[in-house]
Image (cartoon, rainbow, N blue to C red; front, side, top):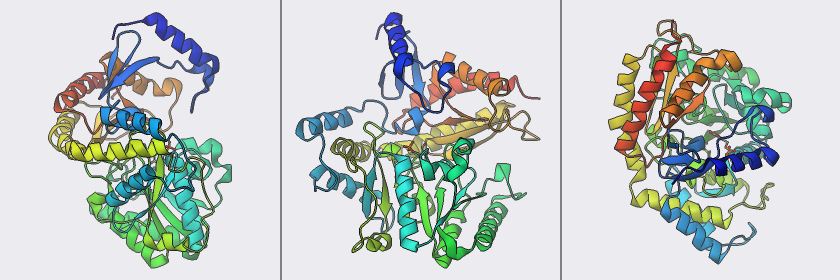
Length: 449
Ligand code: PLP
C-alpha cells in the first residue's frame, strides 16, 4: 500500500498520548506505527516492508492474516461472541478436542486461559494441589511469563524487579553445552552432569517438599537450546521416582515451531502438564491453556478446581484455534516448518557461521534457531555482556538496525538473534531473510576482537 507518513505520525502521537507499553521506560521508546501485515510480512506508513523473522513474539506460526482464521473469527463473531466458561459450547469443545488429539500421551483434558503466563500459573496451582507440596524448580535459562509465579519461575533478568514473592521457587541449571555450567566437553557429559545436578538440587531441597519441575521443552527466549538426547527422559524418570509433577512449557516451542506439533514429540517424553499459548491460534485472539494428564485431572473429579477466568475458553479465541489447527493440518504447515528448517535454514546458518567471526554457534530445529554472537570464537565471550543496556549493548543495537535497514525484522535477545519466521515461511522468503541476516552480521563482525 502507498506510503502515508502523516497517518503514521498521527498513529504514533495517539499511542504516545495514552498507551503504556510493556517492559519499557515510557519516555525512552519510539514505537513503529504499523499499517498492515500479511503472511510473512508487515509494513509501516513510510513505505517500508519487513520480512518478519521474529513472528512478532514468536507467536504468528501461521503468518499474518491467514484468510481461514480471519473468516472463522468473523463467523464466530456473528454467531456467539462470548459465553461464560460454565456453559458447554461447540467451538470450545472442538478446540479442546483438537488440542488433546495433538498433545502427547494421556494429556486429554484442556483448561483454557488467555495466554502463556496464566497457563503456567494454573499448571503450578494444579501441581501444588495434586501433590500437597509447595516448591517448584525451574531453569535459570528460561522465560515463563510475567505474572506473579510465572515471573518468579523465569530465570532471565526480567525476574529481578519482581523477585520479592519467590517463596518456593528454586532455580537450577539446565543443559547447554556451548556455555556449560558443568565444564562438560560433549553432549553426553552435559546430559549426565545436568541430571546429576538436578538430583542433587532435589536432595538438598528435600524431594518431599517439591511439587513440580517446570522446563521449556526447548528453551526459547533464553537461547533455543535443544536438550541433549536423554535429558528430558532423565528428568521424567527423576520426577516419577520422587513423586514430582513434570510440567513442560510449550508456549513458544509448541504448535509447529520445532517441526512437530509439540517439541516433546522430538524426545518421546510425556509430561504430567503441558502449557501452551502463542501458536495454538497464532495469537489472533488471546488464548493459552494447560493440557492435563488423566491422573492430575482425576484429582479434581470430586474436588473443585480452585481456579478460573471470565474468558476461559472464549468463543472467538477457540474459533481461531480450531481454524488454525485445521489449516495447519490441511496445508501441511508443521511439515513445512520441518522441511524449511532442515533443508534451507539449517544449512544456510551453518554456512553463515563459518564466514562470520561474530557467529559463535548456531543451534535449533524447525523454524526455531538461534545465533549466539561472540566477540571471539575461541573465548566464546558474548558480543555484549549478560543483560547489557545502553552503550554496552551498542553492538547488538547496531546489528538490529542493520537488519531493519535490509528489510528484515529480527528477534534479538542479549547477545543472540533468533531466526523464528512463521511456520508458513516459503523457501524464497527464508532465503531472502537469510541473505539480509548475512549482510547485517557484518555490523556484528565489526565488534569482534
Ligand atoms: N512461557 C514461555 C516459554 C514463553 O515463551 C512465554 C512468552 O514468551 C510465556 C510462557 C508467557 O506467555 P504470555 O506472554 O502469553 O503470558
